[in-house]
Length: 192
Image (cartoon, rainbow, N blue to C red; front, side, top):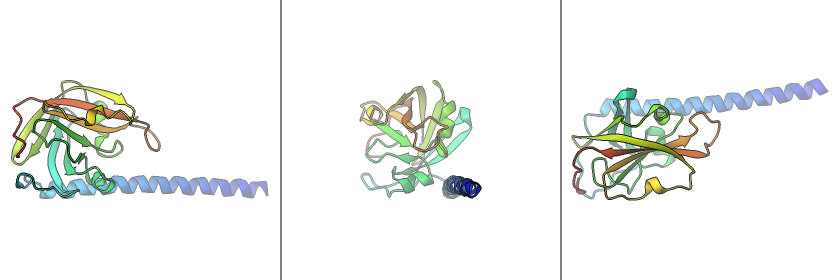
């Protein structure tokens, strides 16, 4: 009887482990597939009328971190479906290259795991509407999820890249890793 209970427990644990592994593998595959799909259609994002809404989940910009040999296609929105497709631009934050705070969030276990190796001085390039915007990383920090300082509007052109922390953590990570970068050129007007 005791052996049967132990065997049942082992099988339950194995089944749960297999489910979690396959679920994580599926999320990873979906994110890679979506990024490849966007990349295959990317020449540049279509120009939009000033003030027109950008549909959630649609491609918005190409983000590159040359030193880390990393390239991602940023989508509009930070809902669960959008973040499966790629790093998401926080709706209401400044657009890449504009004055203000451009906020881009991504999952630590898919797209933004590379941020664990970012350091001050690294270049972050954002391409949008035929323009390339060069940001320079000036620091990173680890904060609690209740600290929303990095989401607040700013007068200068800055970029915040946000992901969960620690990078290697089972389940929902308890903290946030935030990269801060400043635009190196003159920002575009808000109408772009």
